[in-house]
Length: 79
Image (tube, rainbow, N blue to C red):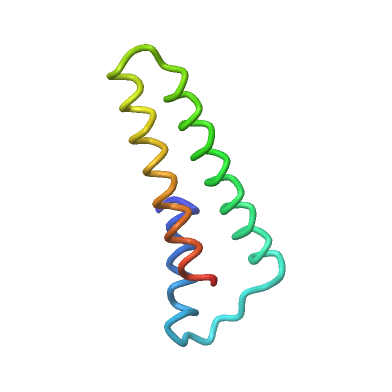
């Protein structure tokens, strides 16, 4: 499993009433993940906007949407 998946499973466990405490460092990591995902969304949207090739443009938009999904998943468990 990737670190992203492990952290997300930990957040879900806590959200569902688990006893695991989240440290300040772990919260900081979650914030870093949110920031990174947000940046990736913006980067791939920008790449799509500047692409002349429709195939590449669509691929960049697809990747952007994937990262938006990551962001939404993380955010929904920590809000």
